[in-house]
Length: 365
Image (cartoon, rainbow, N blue to C red; front, side, top):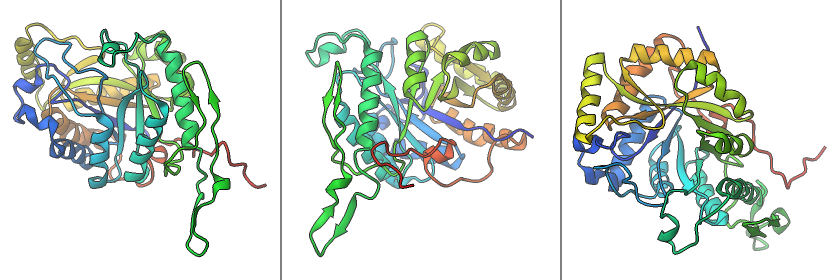
């Protein structure tokens, strides 16, 4: 029996295939309502999934012909889901390009408070053509250098309140011990931030920072600035080639999945979506199409190659999410590589990450 590995699900629209909305039993307008996202995350939670990520882009989606266009803000969606879920990690995408790190720090710290320690942040840069024009700004340069500085500022702001800064002394009228608030005093090429934050330190100390990396510069950024990196290998040999490029963070392999009890049915669904799309869809990650048993074989093969866990992207929602939670998870449980009950604690502890010590608070010897 192998030790259990973590499993994440990436949520985007009505599925990752650009034509998924055209066959979904869910109305396309549901993606603009809270209940749709609540139901998806509750399904993932019932399947004992460790975390869900919420996709976002600075500009509107719709790069693919016929793709569902328009989306809600990922951080706000996660904040809406937080009070009506428990246990499962909530990791929205938020861009560092044209976004002030002070605003990012407060929004994500708020999410961590609302979720009682289940928040994360998938860092993204906004490099698609025309995104700068949405704000009337000049094109950004050195996006990943800027992102690294933004992550540093955000983490400093999360540390700018001591864990015991709030004292609530009614007798003296002192709500906060001001000696427990710290200026971050960051000065860099893109940001000059004094601090402190306006939000008390998050329950996790620092929410989990993640990123998707597919090439040299993002690999370097992820290795130096994240706790968790999502990568897109094509096979087990590719896993072995990628791992040395991202030392330090946990590594999850991404897969798009079309999953069914019968491989032929899964292929029929995928083929129908490709036909509606007008051509075979080729995303950045490997597309798996088949049965839960076949997917379990692949996951164990890649795990043997060295990845820490997996993030599965459902090809069509809600179908492939339910296939993950109700078909794949039992197979993994039968093989002894997935939990059978819900663990408690924060997202950091669930992933086995070390506690985030406050850089401004010197432990007393």
